[in-house]
Length: 478
Image (cartoon, rainbow, N blue to C red; front, side):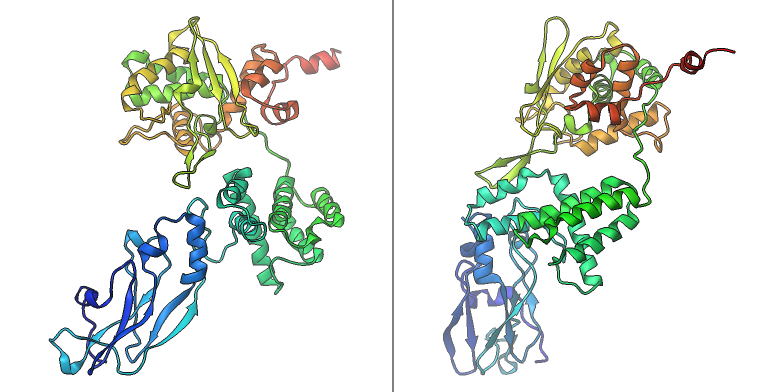
């Protein structure tokens, strides 16, 4: 047909309602009855949870309807927001019969419409699961679907089971699984491999490009977890693979782990003195000073005051971020404050860590009074979640860990320290090292910094300085 199709608004009356759309065939002689019926967006997607969308997608929407007419061109469904969660469905293009142009009668063909199906790879995932990139493997979704289909678990049970692994760890695991998939494609091996030899060759390739033993171990554990959660063949649990990993760690060209450096504390003290009295500071500067003092005195990670943990909301089938709220702070009459650090990296059992932060005799360096004043001044912007640290722009949401990291990085630059050498994660070891150097018992520092084991505390975070007289004391004098 040489004519352009009319506007869809002109043919809406022939398409039926959006809740039960009817596709009709028109000819020059008569208008036939309904050829077939397709569930519209309202019936198909409303009032159903995410897993129901997945099931209904597999039942109704996996095939895309294409119309084999003399007008081969098809227009895809509009990308409006109301269809953002639906798979793309091709619509027929209607043209006016040349003999009836101007009469507004849609014309397709006097021949019956041939409907056939074309598979496409788009999958509708439950809203609470993160969608992987096209062609990538998602460990979380594979885990969810196995529990749902093979064990018959409910949607919620499947969904919250996948949250036993932190979201950041899940992303790391999925990254290594996709590397395995790429390796299999390069050597023409089916994914996932069914023999331990293919996995062994892949781990050798990983070791060739790894800089540390941790990379090899994390990759191996990610592959084992992928096989485990998907109930795949047990070739990954070959004990010989464990020996291979041990051999790769010992014999590969790896670099020793670099420990975080402790930053000098004096530049931050000078910066605090430049800022001056707390009562004269702008709210954003007062917030930044509070974060600086807490990062040093409580040895904070950015995620300690902006947890990565998610809280499941059954009513909406979504997850909301865990919030470090004012309910976690208790100001005492002696000027100290009890801080509850909850749902953080090493709080696996969700018991929380309660630490006591005493006041400082100098008001400029007192983290307790600074924190209390910031909460009072920002209370008018604080919403129902009662988040402690807020962004400075409307709608004043709770800051996430990346925003807090950026604030601390900016403070490092303001203090005159090199940003290429130091970052926000260095505050934790700086506070611990400074406290031990000033004579605080290491066990007290470990509890205050919420380290669970002595090995992690001493091996990675504590940088005690060797006294200058140490060599003289050992070797003596001639």
